[in-house]
Length: 252
Length: 263
Image (tube, rainbow over all chains, first blue to last red; front, side):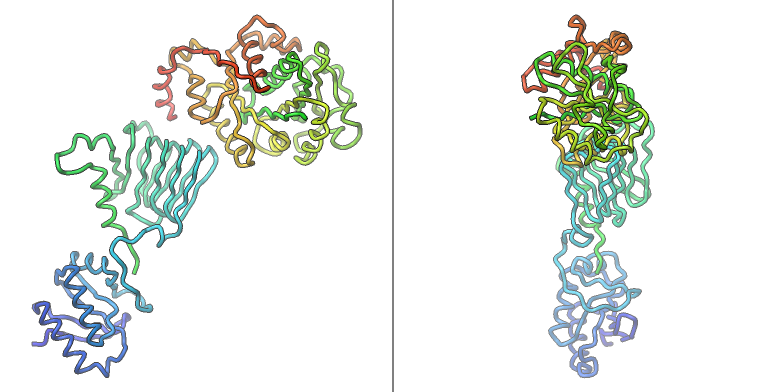
């Protein structure tokens, strides 16, 4: 049975389904055969490889796509149902969405892109953000100074205040993985990606903290609390950052 | 060449006029040539506090609109020959002047005087902007009360946005006993919250009411602590280094209060 299954046309262009039981080398053979047999017909038509529910890793997907391209197939990217494969494909910049409208083929990118560049410039403010003033930026907002009660920070991405955050802060307007960091967090209002944290009468942890969205709620992690963590586990804020970079939503 | 110092606050009733009058008198007592300029048009008080309300013929609007020369609007103080008052109009309101007019007026005064102390109206609209326009230096008056500090912060932001030098704080009506009990913000807390340097701190003093009513600025009486605070501030304005009076010994108690209030 051919490792290459159905070929169908969708809004993405031509989708080549790969047999779930085929091994990687069998798939590679199958794609080479496809190219040889139908290369003329397919020409430069953009193709998507449907990996189905196969849990493939970064290296495997990379090889698959590379070899397919070398054999003359214009592979734009892959479709994947499996979470691991999806993440791997996304890291390679090869993940396609079948619901997506077709666009010109995109170049692959290294896994850890600078999020700010995708969503607009980071905004850096040096000095106090005083009462009645607003700092708004579609990207990340960084403040070297305090934000006072009566001030507002609105960011598409994360908010970092190297000082006391005492005003209103709404982060992650466009990014659910956004975080809010401050040397001292005592906000009059705090929200991430549309979710507001309760603030009235709340005792905020003292010292540097990081606030992030977990599920439907906002979690506040204290820098000092990490001192009591398990040996070898690293600081809690450190692990929050690791979770952040993996979870960043990147388009394309 | 005069240095123009605008005294403002945002919040009303915290002591701008008292500060203007007392600083002007203290500077004159140090030998400086001073004009106290009332920019609170429509609600003039500086003349009353200085005891010169019966001597007003022309006011700042008359001078700005050319109905008189600036010299004609200046009223010499009863007690100090180097001190003058340029009173506000009482029949007009805060919109009567444009910032450019105030700048032009102060430029005329710069030649002959060492200091022009401008009493700003409360608020953050036109009248405040007119008073702010000619300033070489701004003093923000506040009391150690959350609402006053909030307004001071707002005004400071507006002053900074005008790219003036960072303003200095005058912390007025400090009650050391209340600060010690933790019922009042300490002056250091206020300065810390506002992130501003302090020109001086003035203790609460009943004599201020008496002196206002009598039209004899407090600073003329050398005996009380509030008077001393104003005199020290005047010296600092001339560039002298004067050690800050420690009104309150222990500021740590108000830390608890600060957190509770959300500062």
